[in-house]
Length: 221
Image 1 (cartoon, rainbow, N blue to C red):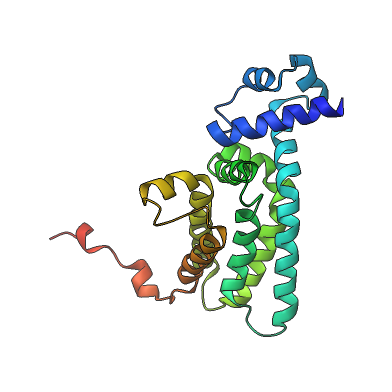
Image 2 (spheres, rainbow, N blue to C red):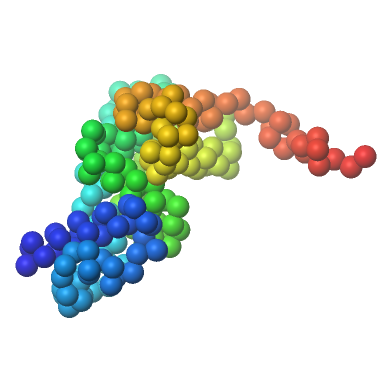
């Protein structure tokens, strides 16, 4: 029974990573796992529960590592401002290091990127898997960037996370289109570049006039 359940999870992981979660029907997972339809319903009950099982099993340890890194930042910074770069690193490094140098790792990084571009499924697993890490990130970013309004800081957080999602999902494309200049197989360089970019966006000066200015091209006259 346990082997059958793992076969289903492994098949779903590969298919979701390669094609997207919404694009893969249960019948394709059944065929790939070489099980019957009753097995999926017995172990999971529905596609939604299978999706939860895939992400909890694969990314639960990643979020535990993130939470530990964020806790360490909180404790080490004391009453001082935590470094934005350290907060971004805590988000990025555990995700990019999944299964480093292996095909399974590539699939899992792609799977993580897929999830965050499919709102229906992101909402399904967010409260179980990501809400606590998100809460800790928000609290640390508020301490690190108190000069920013909650609105501006939250917008920047989502835009920074979007860059991480793109790198996770499009690893092969980035390397190919850049003709190897951006070598995503070099995980540590990928982490460093991504953290630099995310932190620069978060740290940008909060100039209200610049943020509310109307772009020149849209003005009348």
